[in-house]
Length: 261
Image 1: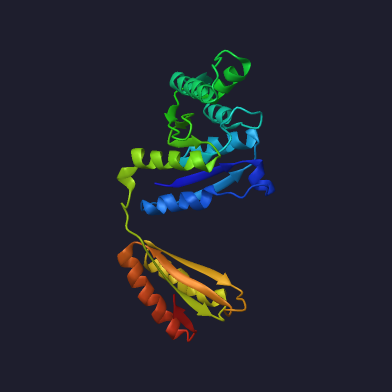
Image 2: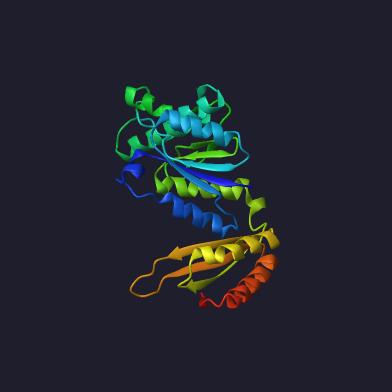
């Protein structure tokens, strides 16, 4: 089962804000024995968001989408999700009630009485307009829900809201996938060697061990370490352990210097 992450926001692409979702989602998935398969960062562009969602809805992937579900002019995700599926936007009744409850709560905390029919509060209800048939993703921070459509889960861009909502989705919908496939990763540091000299070995290992991926992460080095490549294998534990032993044997035959990590 592939898992994808979409992060939406001009502020990420412009550098005005540094994305925090990617490392946190990796952490949440790893803690549950899951892996992130792909990730994309998109601008606040309704056409691009719609086109991306058309493609991902056509897949069987589990997708988390962060950002753009508010009610300001630069929030396009709710409409884009509906357009991607050719569905109308409709006001979700429970989502509406959640927002109204939040409005009343905020007014009470300020010592005021809420006017649910004011222009401002009626506009807030747009945050409960989702594609027809959408389910709610509860928001424990302020009770203004995100939404779910066809294994796609749409949450706010704010980490304090998004992260517990993603955890809720994982724990309530995909617990059966947790730690289903044990994985092992082992690697060494290979010094002063060109990647091209190691490529035939990498190709041969992947061909011999179909449930193993070989990876290489080159580094030009710095004041503390020479030029090196982190060369390793990851995947199904039994095949990975065997492939790693063979990897080290072949490196010795190539007479290259390496060390365990």
